[in-house]
Image (cartoon, rainbow, N blue to C red; front, side, top):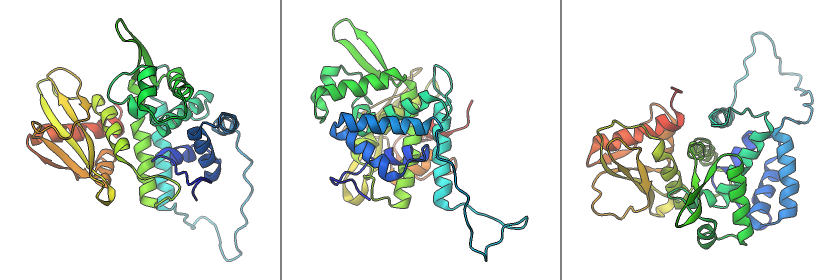
Length: 320
């Protein structure tokens, strides 16, 4: 299933919405396509429909008629499929992320959760989140670098992200108003990564593969969440091997004593000798699973290992 105009949802977005809603995938795909095309009227209609679903206004579930040769009783065992288990994991990851909201934990039944999930998914689909992953930017800067139909769309995405607490506006004496990713936006890489992994495992044709922009933005957003020993320092190239020989993506993490790590683009920096490298599957599994360690390291292996393990703890590790 692909959109009417060949549209495919950016990695993670369609499955993330599908995991927390009873709306059919076809409808959600139409929502995302209308938003990306700038069809405001259709987008608003779809947004209202999605918000209603996220508020818990589900259709009544009809009883299921089972064939006569199937007997359910005390000894019967029903087993969820691997895809079903993964979808439940995505939903639980969304719930965990909603519970981390700085202004107060949200549940899926809370109307504000629908607004937050929509803002995140639409902002990721339009690559507004990607553009803000590395540094604060003004609306003018975002408009200049984003491939959106008009500047009004840029402002709408930024306003929606700021309204739910995913972006914050900072006043610079020289540069004016600039928008910066909040900690909660950085933590949203967890549900996006979980949803993207399910899409890859299930081979969903209505979603686009993870691309260089997704991989780099994910690492730049998540790296500052990593907690490090106070005496650790150095730089580490976090490299992701893209599919079908599409090259490498990622970011360079900079670690300074007593400061949170930062991450920027620049994989071609020759002076960075420490590396953590793996395929998309290797990175997703290592960050998501507590016992998956599939990332290859070289150079300062202690620094690289701490950074990779720290990404798992920051996004999927046990709560402190």
